[in-house]
Image 1 (cartoon, rainbow, N blue to C red):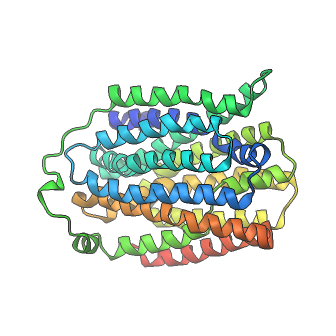
Image 2: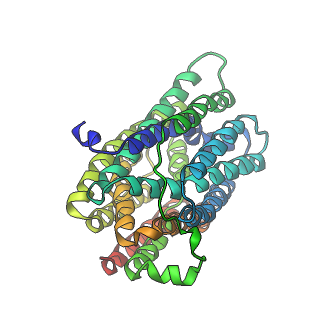
Amino acid sequence: MKSLLKLPHTVIVLGFVSFFTDLSSEMIYPLLPVFLSGILGAGALALGLIEGIAESAAALLKVASGIGADRMRRRKPLIVAGYGLAGLVRPLIGLATAWPLVLVLRFLDRIGKGLRTSPRDALIADVTEPALRGRAYGTLRAMDHAGAVAGPLVAAGLLALSGVTLRHVFLLAGIPAAIVVIILLAGVDEPGRSSPGNARPFRPLREWSALGADFRWLLLALLVFTLGNSTDAFLLLSLSQAGIAAAWIGVLWSLHHIVRMLSAYYGGMLADKTGSRVLVAAGWFLYALVYLGFAVCSEATPQIALFIVYGIYFGLTEPAEKAWVSRLVPDRLRGTAFGYYNGVIGLGALPASLFFGYMWQSAGAPAAFTAGAALALLATVLLVKVR
């Protein structure tokens, strides 16, 4: 609690925004593979296509919104627009009658994420002193995961009621999405920046060079890792094929996010004390071990255990990566740096998910999980090039 009191008001408010956003999103996301395969008749390749295209679209906008945020006096308008668009279209998945419509809605949902993510990450760095940035990003991710804990539990509770279907649950996810916009408009106080970059021309090659070699090496390592980091929907699909019912998958998703919440909070504080490289490397190595475990274990019990342990990877890496980015680059290019950081992660999502889906259908799930683990280990080795 004392650590929270040290953080700026804006960081705390954005934490609650993240909580209600994920409450809405996670009422839908863990049930989406079941909805696509069981109701709409889509296969693993369609699932990979939907998630890959959606995340890659978000990635392109994360780059553009990050660059744009450095040229605006305030970052809040982009943040509000992004959360508002996603909250409007996400519940409409409950009305879809074919998987291409789900693709369109997921695309628009991720467009909203692309608009908001880089400006929000830059705003947190703007209002937080460097020594507390790991803690700030860790708190944001902890609140995010707290919403991800609540969302599946709410969905499971609703599905337990007589007459409530997956479609009803998806539509009801619009309620917390509306709360998000209210909190943003009323609670985020952003100080105007005295010298936004709109006075200078945009010179991408010069600004890319100014970001520094260490940042570029970090992006390369992130890209390699992301190519093996397919959508978590495949993990949920694997759990489903192991014989776990849809309602229990929702409960497991919540337990998984409890681990993510706790590890993100403490991982952020640890990143401020020990530095980021050790935590990121440890997280990527753990990711590789989990994927290897899914490759060799097809029974429900070991997969459940691996899925819970998988949550620790997020706590080790998410706050540490963002704190690392904020400290590697000049202040005037902070939004741009977060744009590239978020963009690289998202742009790798399409080939990663398509490749994983193709491997799953052509060579089987074990081969797909093994390939993901190998890329994670390669990326871990590349981190030695970054300060």
